[in-house]
Amino acid sequence: MCRDVLRWLLALPGLRVPTDEAREGERRVGGQERIAHTLFGDIPLVRNYYHRPAGNGGRFPLDEALGLIDGYTPGVAALIGRCAAEHPFQHAEASFRAYTGLTVDARQFPRLAEHIGPLAERFLRAKRPSGEMTPPRVYVATDGTGAPLRHEELKGRKGRQPDGTAQTHEIKVGAIFTQHPIAGQKPWRDLDSNTYVATTLRAEPFGEMMRTEFCRRFPVPPAEVAFLGDGAAWNWELQRIFFPMALGIVDFYHAAEHVTHVVDLIEDRHTPSGRKRRKRWVKLLLRGRLDVFLAEARQAFPPDKIEAGEKALDYFEKNRDRMRYRYFRERGYFIGSGVVEAACKTLVAQRLKGSGMHWSEQGLSHILSIRTTLLSRRYDDFWRSLSTLAPAA
Image (cartoon, rainbow, N blue to C red; front, side, top):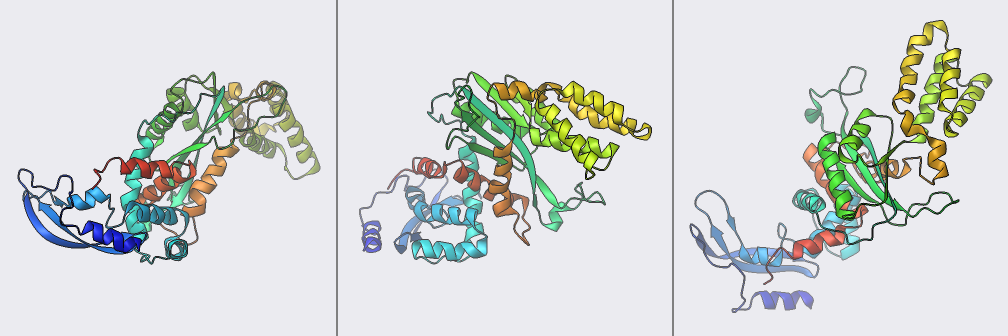
């Protein structure tokens, strides 16, 4: 019934379509037919096309007024984008049919993602104020992961394989979340306070994206900002440039892994004495006694491991101010980067690292943008923003 009503309305002789008139340099071609795919079923359209002989293509004013994306109404396109971002393309078709009762060819899911992805990315980078109240404490956390690319796109890239080649493309992932600390209680993240940034670009544009998202959410700077990351140098360079006001904190579990590496230079970590040594040093680190740990480690290195040992301890020396774990815990700070590490799994791995998957870098970016809007709870806002751009018929 809804389909038939829409078909009748769109066929009315007096239907007024904004911008349905030739502009300078355009040639009108009337009576062009098309099928519009709606949530109520397919509807045939007859509309005008305006051709630009200069070679710049043309336009369909009715398509623009209805907000059609490659022939699909926004309601259908939004569900296709959601299915494409949540399921492998071959499974997305079945899920979409189960949700809507409509049949869409599986090949349309990557095709629609190519249209929706850039629009979602543009929406994410726009400086639209969130309207939320500024909390007392905000965390910025960053990490990196990888996703498999097609073999032809990996040629010539350096990577971590034994032969120096790459199997994946690095994805920078960031999370921003808030906390209302309560004295004497363990830290708790505010419910649904996390939003994400993810990109296949390098560290500097990623930092700009993180800063944009931070300023979008908190035009009024919060009283406290903490920056969480592992010991990788790019994290702290990003903090220095884009979040100089933040308190830097090295993820404690990464620091504990480096303690294990130091133990391995002295003895086997799996022996009773190795386990005991590691346990003691991790506790020293957690209790803010970094100097005691460093002194004991230097005394324990065998003569032939002193140089390697000093190199391993350099990680702790460089991050000394970011490893004041006793100070951080006393003030109720998080000392683990679990939120962003979980984002690497939910945002990237669950959809982009499936068995047998190999992406083009462009296709990877499109799905990543759509998933970011979904997991940041901004997907509906994204589609509402699109509806305000098109003049309604």
